[in-house]
Amino acid sequence: MFLPTGCSKSTAGDQNTVAEKSSGSASQSTGSKAFSPPAKNLTDADVAKLKWLEGTWKGMDGDKPFYERYRFEGSSMVVESLKDEKLEVEDADRFELVDGEFGKGEAEDRSAISEITDNSVQFVPAIKGTGNSFRFERKDENTWNAILEWEANGNQPAGSKVYVMQRVPS
Image 1: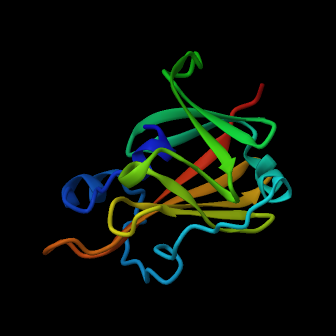
Image 2: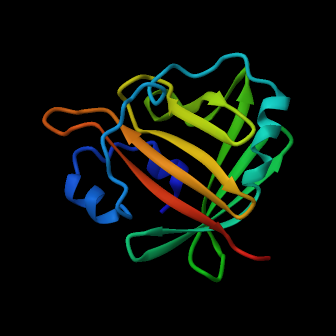
Image 3: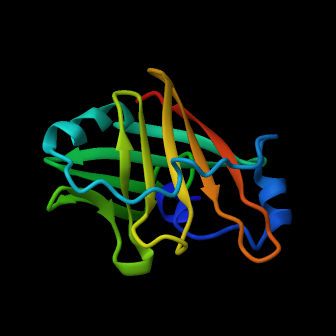
């Protein structure tokens, strides 16, 4: 599992998988903030609000653990998907601040911040209807929630899924 990559792809068509993967958290989404447009006025100071994500984290996808590492390089955030508890890098993604927008990817694969506070960040598809939204909410220094949200698609209802991320001691 690679949250920022997995979050940008729609899971609404795979309802059984969503229910299976959820830790009892699949629910209907209100969609109020999840699908607003990306912010175009972000600064380095806004990106610095994400520093609480820095470190190595473990989440659970059903009964399967997954690991991610978040680090900052200037006004960019690098997210590494780690192979297993040995923490070998399997894949990486880079979020960058460009012209007031902080995000990753291009065109219909792009996700960018729509809202940021000191303890949370909301990412949305740059083009409405092309992917999932995801929100990270800090609970304390060692725990945060990753919340995936998707719009209704055909006969699949809107919904959400929560992953609890726990800090891996260094």
